[in-house]
Length: 329
Image (cartoon, rainbow, N blue to C red; front, side, top):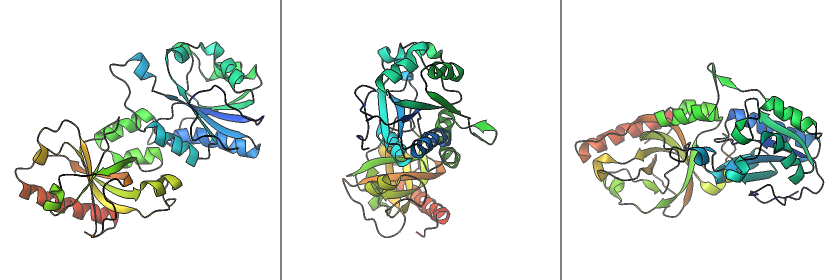
């Protein structure tokens, strides 16, 4: 059964009588813990020739309850939906999280689902998931409410790494501190962003390090600094998903700077992502859409006394990144 890439509410979904196995959660980042929930739903759906679906929300509830300080998100909704699809989801439902939805009592939540999704067979959540007005509903309450309507509930245990639970908030902290290798180990893939190449000032070329200037400034900003990265044409990356070895396109090693470029730009209002590919060939140009996977942090962004000192540091950055990426500059 073919569904649109994303359905934007619970209303009017035609399941054609097939049993729906539904994972529910915000799933920001689609990390290893989230993947265990999603994969359980997909496995059950395939075993029973049913539909694997995911119910997620936009915007994040914090935008409603504390708009002055909303949670900064790891991933935008478009790429999140793509990851759901890459993991085997047939149906992606992005329910608007507004005041009406937030006001649904926990005792009415399952009834609302079954009235709109009448073939709902099973619900998959993390063991700490909460729902309903005031987040008063927990997994035992969900089990009780679902059982009354003939729906099964499967709650997946939290996953731990180095003695601490894997969570979106933990990953956000890693990104903000520049701990990319730790973040990637929790995500189960390399943190990535997607953007189009934009014309730049060509200062990097004058320095001997031409860069691809990418029009990206995410909701969550990783630590300003220099990173080892790899770059793939976006369409090839999207077709395969972010998991190692599955890309259909060539990955190019590079060095990225994310920040305000204090040596050459002064007090830039917004940060910029620039990527210098290691090697002599750059197949990309303006308007090409790329995916950049952030692999490791090299150093924080600093202001140099002059362009000569900057050039010297860039050479060092490229040598170190090339060594770690297995490339030669």
